[in-house]
Amino acid sequence: MRKKTPRKANVHDVRHYLSLGFRDYTAARFLLLNDFLLQGATLSSTAVEKYFKAIFATKGHLIQSHLDDYKKFKSLFGRLDISIFERLDENYIKLLGEIYKLRYYDSVINKVSCGFFKWQVIGELDYTIDLIDKTCYSELSKPEVPTRYMQSVNNKNEYVWKENYVLNGLGKKEYMERVTEGVIIHLYRGRHEVIIEPNSIIPHYNGRITTVKDINIDPMDLMDKLVQQ
Image (cartoon, rainbow, N blue to C red; front, side, top):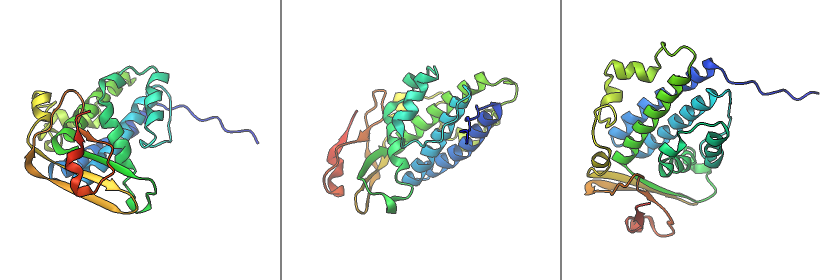
């Protein structure tokens, strides 16, 4: 039997992914702003994944992988000659890849360790979605039809505008270094989650979000492992 040739993506696929991604984006913002940090980060991961698939679809490419396969997504930007990856925060994208693995944490076999701060993941989410949505829009054959994101921006939708440094014209470094709370997850044969209390941390920002790496200790001692990448 002849193997089926994968079909090429079209403008309908682009708009489909943008629409699905926008739903996850607004839900992620709502959860993050209301301090459901792990849940909001999980939806951030699926939102950015769908926006990545939308921008790949503008080049006729459909991808079935998920964001935990981070290297595959990164390589596609180069293969498809999409030049915006260097404008994204690679720390943030890697974090979302790790967060994706936590959707069904009871079935995770390998160790997963990650951590983040509230305002930094909101800020980078807003920046990433704004950049990709505008890039996709410029590639559409009928750009006079606005995306759902653009409609919400134009309509001053609170779910998009609230605490959005991009839309409100705020300085990124100042926004990313706000006093904040955060969460650290260390998962290995069980689940450990440490919530960093509000008004206790002022993270540094030098163009990349602050993440947690090399965690091999008790979760209650994880604060000592916060590093600026």
